Length: 98
Image 1: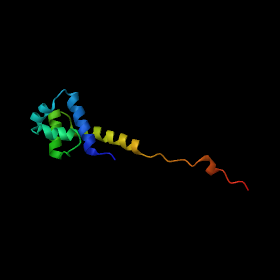
Image 2: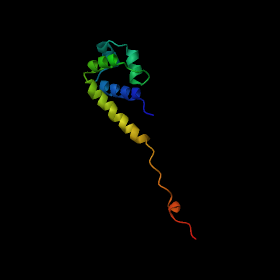
Image 3: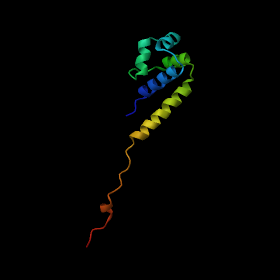
Image 4: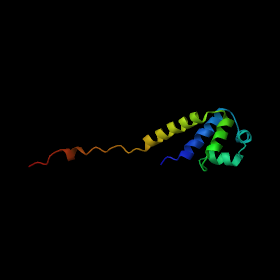
């Protein structure tokens, strides 16, 4: 099962690292506790829409861009979890000899 909060946390962490920011810097800019941001990045806490907006602002990333990234990651995971249809064995297709 794909957890949205884990994928969101991964995307937030990737954006933070890409910009060379520390948790402390994002925490100060977003006015959110460092520990809470860390829990969000690790997928342990759900981010409210207000908190997410604050984090996106601190990371200088559009919410829509972040959500597109999360959506793409979810699609990849969903495809990986799909069970391929199992074809019947060749012997099952052969009519029994009379």
